[in-house]
Length: 234
Image 1 (cartoon, one colour):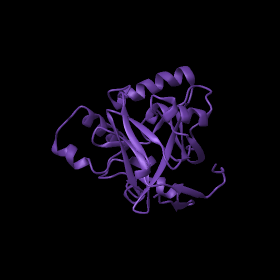
Image 2: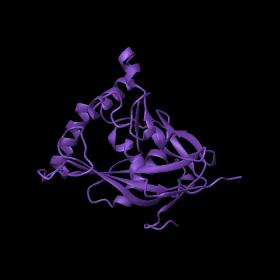
Image 3: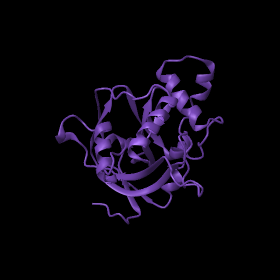
Image 4: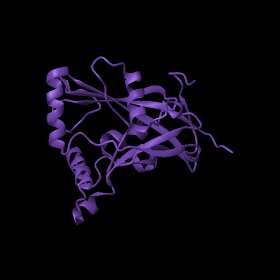
């Protein structure tokens, strides 16, 4: 078992893992505006939104890769999601990971070993912009998002919803890829929705190759304090 204070992260080859499919996981909102409106309604009922996301690491060519869920052809996100009111962060992240990537059979659900919290992001207002700090003039932030490093076992089975793809993206592709062609967070999310609606245009094609956003693109810096132990299997 990996201790919370450990600076060493074991990473296993992507080929060590098995990938299958399961029923689609549909998005609750059809536009960014709808998502922010739903967030505002939930805030009025439950207060600040708390969400947790997982950094799942594998290795290819002796370099760390992060597993990202791809929506459509353009937008990637970390597996995770919103916690229930009062829900424990660790248990909530395990629940979300099982919902996103766990098989329908309990015997095949991965042994999620939740490790260190490596980043905290804040949403000051009902907007798409998030910051790695809470601005001092904000007394009632609308969301707190925490990123946890999850230590994977050598062999696991992941069940990917049929309408999503699971990508292994190298750290060097994420690094310094924050805005990508000058896209804001809102434009990046709008692009994802355009892709889901099968919009075909030269603009969409031009925007496609940069799609990570600030939360994901800063993960290489957040992981720089760890030592990666690249383990090869027979």
